[in-house]
Image (cartoon, rainbow, N blue to C red; front, side, top):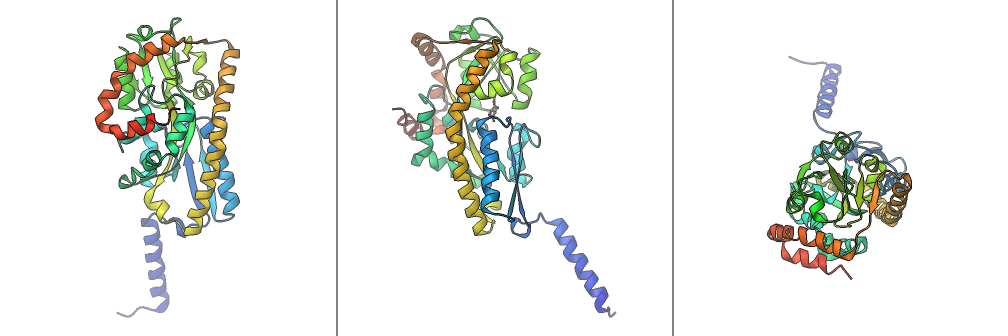
Length: 336
Ligand code: LMR
């Protein structure tokens, strides 16, 4: 049977359309390339501001070539789904807290060891060291490439009780934790009951008494209004909440070289911007919490801090094998 040229053309067009619908469009074929950046915190936080800065810079550097869409506050994907969404190509950038990667690599758990870092300066130094930078590519075999570390800050402990000074004050209490086995062990070492829970559910869980307490940065406590549903926040600085901005390795490697270069530059500049702001945002939010007068801020003496440190110590031994002694040593060297 013979076909006319127009039928042949129509057949070809249908085949091309069919193929285009069946395959996810490669980034290079899109114009402009859409970069979806999903995260779980509010906009006026270090991560929220960093994401908006990245959008501004990327679109400035790659006019007409790239459009960045930022989705804050778990609008698009929450904790449970955002890593999967990057791997499926539903979003291109996310910045989970370093506590949320333990399904992909045990190494990044180093950041969760209690009282490992003296302050955010030490965290920064470790992230900039060869060992710290090496962790950015520790998940490429799982399809995830780390582009940068972003700071939030040091964690404080809060509960709905009046007394929160010593480890014995949290015995038997229920705490919301991020999805991290190290954090689970940390609260068990304190004789408390940890519950893994997505960030977007914490306020309600605190308000309704599903949990008694949680641990977070001043910025997250203030922007989520946790201080309105907690009685005491102890200034423990016992750990860190920082982020790794990650992308889908295949998508990133498949970008046109000029686009990848522009996005890398935008990321480096947005990182410097956000990391410079982070400590100020946290200190400002601490003041706002104080001024709000809802939760009391409990200052701790040297002896109190030493008691928390001692109570959480067993966690290190438990995870040393998974994390590696060399990495722990490298992190410890960052303390001045
Ligand atoms: C949390 O779940 O408490 C934090 O990791 C949220 C965030 O992204 O800062």
